[in-house]
Image (tube, rainbow, N blue to C red):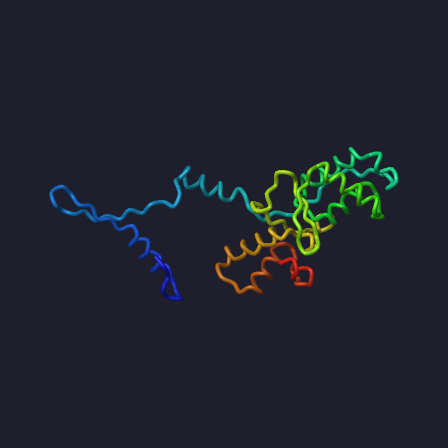
Length: 219
């Protein structure tokens, strides 16, 4: 049933369920039996306790985790000689942090080799490593988001909360779909919010209590 009025309460919802469940059956002797048949939305796959446990076992809201990569002291000039190790380092980081922005991934990889200068040659070498690993790309607002092979951006459901230290993530490094997930999550919890409040609550959920320019742009 559709909601005609602007207000709706438990009594109206209960009445709509009872109306939809109304059944009238004709018997062979001409009499009628009236009953209520409330059908489940989905087939029950277990006990109530099992269903509650399964639903609460996974939450899309998780802390953002930085990959714990072993530091290797390699100069930028010698990095091409360690290309295979470089690819392994990228894989280790992507396994934990994907999807991740290209700029943040570059920063993580170079930091693991104690390289502080990001040159054109270094950028070319990293791009070659990303191509070898067949990382997928999505573009947003001048930034490139990198995904592991097999990850589907349209099916991504996580909301990763920025933390402290290496686990802190700039708002510009948030994939667009993850920001959308946060807004949708807030709306499911609050049922109804105006757009500015929904964005503000979503940003706060992801670890950004202050609405700066970068945070506003990310949402």
